[in-house]
Length: 248
Image 1 (cartoon, rainbow, N blue to C red):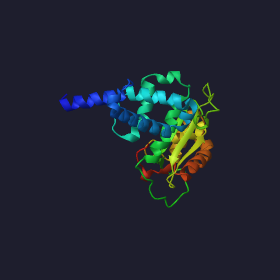
Image 2: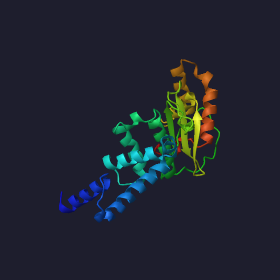
Image 3: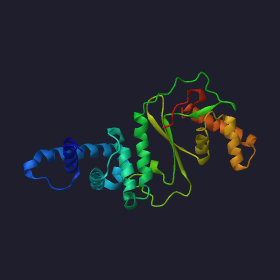
Image 4: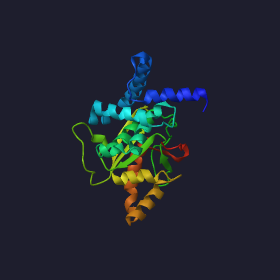
């Protein structure tokens, strides 16, 4: 480490520290507050429900600990939210927070990730009607969430202390209107989405897989699989297989 690197390390260590700054170094204090306020503002805006649940004072304590203790692995400001989630998990701080914290933070982060994603949807297909041979895939601008808590309903007045008896299945996606949308799915619909992550999966192939898993005849499920696939396709959660892009 050369002298410049040592000076930079000393500066960042003092910016991270919570030790009082002498009056003679008031400019350093201004810089420290600027760093804290910028990161706090981003986290407050990125996790509004979490902020509502634990309050400003509680969030400020976590932000201060994050700045002091976490060695960020990215220089990008938009990655602060994910780094914050990673810090809470690695420092085991979530154990002292509400039991839904990890899932809530991840769900709130999804909205930002989809909103700023560079991918664009292809032009709408000429035909919007599916048949058993239609090949489909997940949009690059969608994210499936399967968890234990109803994170889409959590607020200051609704904070579950126990997991839901059944999996909570949600999908978030950015539509052609460039708005991020959310929808609750049944476990069966969520499984259909999961199966379309396989390259080149057709409606019929997804139906066959579901039938194998359920120990049922594929013919008894085909109409429902087509109906659910069509609903997801109409919302651009699913796309024609020829338009495949990386899944968020």
